[in-house]
Structure formats: structure tokens, C-alpha cells
Image (cartoon, rainbow, N blue to C red; front, side, top):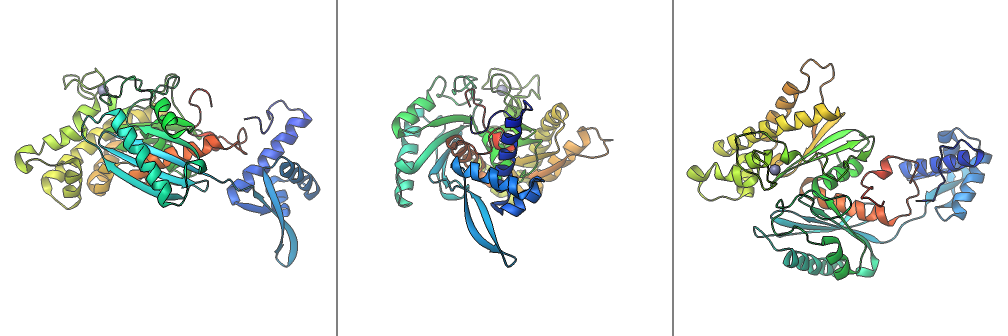
Length: 406
Ligand SMILES: [Zn+2]
């Protein structure tokens, strides 16, 4: 990331680098600005801006063209358009979701495959690869246009290894070299990330948390995931396990969890447990049925979801007390039930996080829906492919980076 030199040394050249970075940041924010507008935003003279813009143009980062603004001729400065597409692949407990999108983060195509319980890594990845080729084909493009792929996996991912860091959480996938296998099959740069982290990245860059630099994210879905964004960056911890909300202990005498611990939140509100609570009254039902019935007003299903919301809210409150965020963003299938989930979740948080605090933490539902992890993974792929015009100049552009070597 040596597009701009370090801006902290205080020398004349680092001041110049800081100004260059500042200009790129302003253009990124507004899409395109005239030199006069940049001068005004940056608080510098138009002569200085003209000089700096020429340097950015020489470095291949921006392009200029003549336009008329308010009846006067002006130079419009825009970022050089990036071409290529990125792929996000969400490998969940029971589904595989793939999104393909371009550098504006526009999703060009999204596809979904249901997966059997205890799905096998080789079969699942092979089906994913075939689906990617089909999707590219129907978009009239091919793999040569793809700049990278990120797999967002429903398990904690080790920072150093890019592999599942806690055995047993995604059964059958321990020790699988997801990065190696996918990059070999597709001949692409591949990254592997935790799904809740990628959903948080998506909501931060393009969704409910846009412009909010400090938030806690809760992925309330088949299992419960959590993520922390602080000062515009994902907090990953030393090994990559930060914010694993599903494995907060909530019942010391509860069931043994897949992680080996006892009474984790996932054992209490994970999909299999919630569905099992209705076995006598509702017979065999899927997690999707449970959510649909609750949204449709079925009293038993509503009761199960609203009580789960309280348990998840209790654990999320602990995460909020540890991190002191501006807001909490919540996504995942459980939020499809609207107020059935959100009202008790919000009430629990407000009851448990310093009830006397002057400014209670806002709870806002995510806006990107079920594809949030895959969209975040797509953004991660695109970020990794760009020599980041704003790298070093904006913490925001760094969110999602930091998988050890980035
Ligand atoms: Zn656990």
C-alpha cells in the first residue's frame, strides 16, 4: 500500500502526500469534484490543487475533463474507473450464497443453494465453483474479469491460517484449506473470512451503518454471530476470534456446544434448538417455516422468536458494555419477523446497558438482508484488488482489511 507515503513524519513531502490523500478522499466521497470545489473542501489554493491533481493524474489515480459549471468552464476530477468484478461466497450451515458485483459495489447477480445438514466441503465448494461459472456466463462475462473471491464462512476464521479456528463449529470443515482449494479451482486470489464480520463490513460500507465508525453488529440467523467495528475498522483480536457472540456462555448448566464449551448462546437460540421447542405443537418444521409463521402471527412461533430475542439481547448487551459503540446493527433471518424480534431485543439492551445512561444505544436493523455476508465478502474481494487510492488516508477504507498480511 505504498501509493502514498507515510503522512505522520511532518516533513514537507509528507505534507504533500497528506494533501494528495486528502484530495482522493474528497473525490471518493463525492464521486467527482471540480478543482475549485476541491480547493474549497481542502482549504488550499486552486494553484496548489491544480499542481496536486496533475501529480495524481500522472500516478494514474484520477482523470480530468473539461465541464461547464454555473456557466463557467471548469476541470472535473474523477477517480480512474476500476474495471473488473468481485465475488462473495457465503458458506453457511445450511445454505450457500454467491454474489457477483462491480467496483461500485452494485450486485450484478445473486444466487442461493440450500445445503444439507453436515454438508461436505469438497461437494459444497465444487457446487459453488460450478454456480460461479454459470453466473458469469449468464452475465456475459468470464473468470478473466474477476479480480478476486472472498469466502465468508459461518465459523471463526484464524487470522494467520485463513482456516476454521475452533474445530467442530462447521462440522466436517476442520483443517480444510478453503483458500487453497478455491483458488486452485478458479485460479483467483481468494480470502477467507468470518461471515458476521463480512456482514458488518457490508452494512458499514453500503448499508445501515454507513458513516457510523463505531458499532456492534449481531447476525441473528441459523446461528448467532457478532462483529465489532471500532474507528472504522473491524476488530479481529489477536487470533481472529473477537466478537464471537454465539459462544458467550449464557447457561452454565446447559447443553455442550459444538465449540466444546457448555451453555453457549448458540445452544439456547441456534436454529435446531428453536425449532425443537415447537416439535410437540407444530411437528417437523424448518427454521424458515418458524420465521415465516412468526412473521405471519402464529402465537407459538412468535413466543419462541421473542424469547430468543431476549437471550440474544442479554449477550449483545455484554458486548456493548465491553465496546461502548454508537449503535448496534442487527441482521439475519430472525430480524425478518420485524417487531416480534426487534422490540424485545431493543428493550433487553436498553434495560441492561446502563439504564441511567443519558444516551441509550440505538438498535437499527441492517438494510442488506440475507445477502449481507456475501455482499461484504464481495466488497472485501474488490478492496483487496485495488491499490487503494485512499489507503493510509482513511480508516474507513481499511475496514475489512487486516487478514494478517493486508
Ligand atoms: Zn460454543
